[in-house]
Length: 285
Image (cartoon, rainbow, N blue to C red; front, side, top):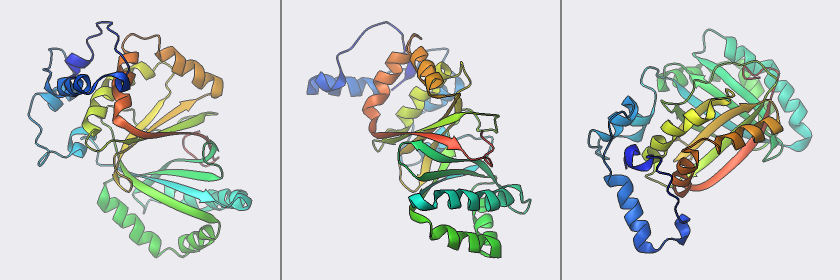
């Protein structure tokens, strides 16, 4: 599946994927994996297609993640008892900045939010661990010996209905999630991909991200390593809901965006959108 065959911009239009016959769909899928590169592809795409990728030797994390950094990310989803959300937020405001600012902890708080639209009474936290898995292990070990944190964790547990987390890597072609001034709302778009399609997703979005930079809305893109697998998270920032609508609509007026959407939709099993409001302690405002 080379980008040269997928993104020629010929202007051709196709019948919806579900309406094509079985033989047509088979031909379509074979075409994705058998096309050749054309000259002028960027270096990331060349590295993906010039050499043969042996699935037994080449993990998609090695092909898709940033090489110049070794950061690991953790995203946490906490479903809070409705009557406890204010107390939960206050507790986070008191404790999380101490971990973020503590020099003894090789981690930083990227962002912390409450879900506004989507699952209600939910908190989302995104952490970065500089140094990968060893940094994560170091932080967890030190926190287990931190009396204040253990008291925080116990009090927090009494406020939660459920919680889950995932360990993530950054896509190499996405923006670095750095602190930004507000006020902004944030959209976390989460995609459950079909197993075996992460490389295809990366191929298309290495192109697609250039269509979504006009208003500096692209914050970060991640894929899961531990937890729910074949999960992708795209994080966007907008001034308000109308700005979100206008920015997303403008992408459809750019030649090539419609084809990229067309080819990525069959890779998705499920998708979810959360609109989130940052807490005051969040570096992403």
